[in-house]
Amino acid sequence: MAAKPNAIVAQSGGPTTVINASACGVIQEAMKSGKIGKVIGATNGILGVLKEDLFNISAEKPETIAGLKSSPAAAIGSCRYKLKKMEESKADFQRVVDVFKAHNIRYFFYAGGNDSMDTADKVNKLAAEAHYDLVCMGIPKTVDNDLACTDHCPGYPSVAKFVAVSAMEAGRDTEALCTTDTCTILEVMGRNAGWIALAAGLAQREPQDAPHLIWIPEKPKSRKQMMNEVKAVYKEFGRVFIVVGEGMTDEKGNVVAEDKSALSTDAFGHAQRGGVGEILKTWIMEDVGIKARAQKPGTNQRAAMHFASATDIKEAYLCGKMAVKNALKGVNGKMVTLVREKGRQYKCTTGLAKLSDVANGEKMVPASFINKQGNHITKAMRDYLSPLIQGQARILMGDDGLPQFMRFKRKPLKTKLPKYL
Image 1 (cartoon, rainbow, N blue to C red):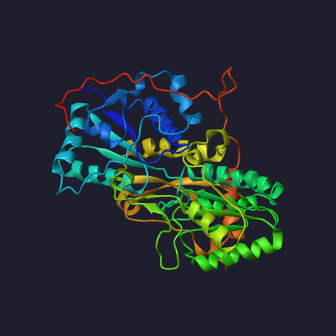
Image 2 (cartoon, rainbow, N blue to C red):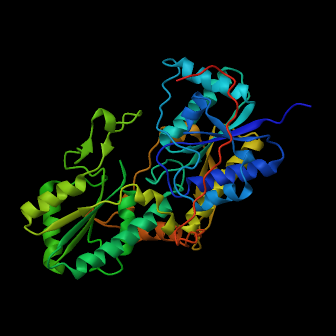
Image 3 (spheres, rainbow, N blue to C red):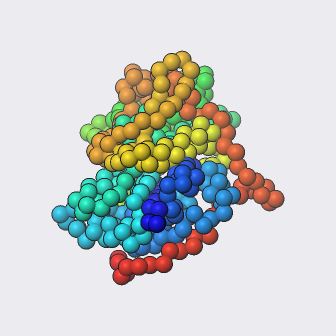
C-alpha cells in the first residue's frame, strides 16, 4: 500500500500576530483529513526547503499546535529569500522539486504577502513543467493590507487595533502635558500604502481626540503643506498629534525617509523605510516653533498579541483551514481570499484568487476612505474597519503574570539530499 502524500507548510515575510493561527488551521485540518501523511514544517520559509531544513510538525503535541492561535510572529520560521526567474536560476527551482520528491511532499502551503505568492506561483509552474504532481496553495498574510483580490488581509485587523489604541493612549499623554510636549508624531508601518496609518483614525471620536492629522503615501504633501496643517491644528487645540506612515512621500512623489544601504535592502530590492517621524519632528520645531516628540512602535505593532483582534485570529485560522480543504478537492495555484458579504451585518467568507494575480497586484487605499484634505479617514473607512477589530485575543497566562507562547520541539527530518546553500 502506497504511503499517504505529505504536506509542507511554510511562512514568509514579516511576521504578524495571526500568521501562526493560519498555520494552525493548515496543520489541524491536514491532520484530521485522513488523506495526508505527515505535516512537515520548513524552517524559515522557502530557505528551509532549499536547505532541506525540515521538521515533523505531526509529531508535536496537540496543545503545542493549538497554542499557535495565541502566539505571535512566525513559529515555523520566516525569511525574505527571493527565488530568481526560472531562466536565471533553474538550480533553485530544481532543488525545491528534488526536496519535495525526496520527502513525498505533494501539498505546499505558503503563507505570506505579494512576494511570497510570487514564490508559490513559480514553484507551482516549475512542478508542472517537471511533471511532478504538486498542489500549491497560498495563504494571505500582511499587516500592510495591500494584497490584491482579498477584502482584507489576516494580520491587518490586529495591527489596526493596536495602532488605534496606541494613538488613543499617547494622545491622552500629549493632551495632559501639551504645555511642554506640544506635538507627538507616531510613525507606523506601511511601505507603499496607508492602511495602517489610517486605522489610527478610529481613535478620534471627537475633533479634539488624537490623531488630529494622518499622513499617508497615497496623499503626497510638501513640507509647507504639512506645516500649515500643523499650525492650523495647534491654533485650534493648543496641541498636535500626528500619525504618519513610514512610506510617506513628498509633493514630487519621493519617499521622505528610507535607508538604501546594502544591509537595509532585502532580497526583493526593498529599501528599509523609516525615520520620517524624526524628520517631521525637526521640521515642526524649525517651522512651527513648538516642541515635538517622535516615536515608533516598530515590530511591536505586528507582534502585539496582547491586543490582537479575535475576529482576525478567527479569519486567519479559517484561511489556513480552507487552503487544505480546497487543496484536497484538487484546487491548485490559488490563494485563499477573504470575501465580505453584502448586508448591514458583517459576515466574511472565503474565496480563491490566482497566485499570479496576487503576486502582480497591489491594493492601495480607496479615495473614498480618505477625507478631502488628505489627512484623515471618512465614515466609509470606519465602516470598513470597525467589524475587523472586534473581540479580544484569548491568551494563556503563566504564573509569572506574563503570556505563555508556544515553541515547537522541532524533530528534524533526516536529510536525503546533498547539502545546498
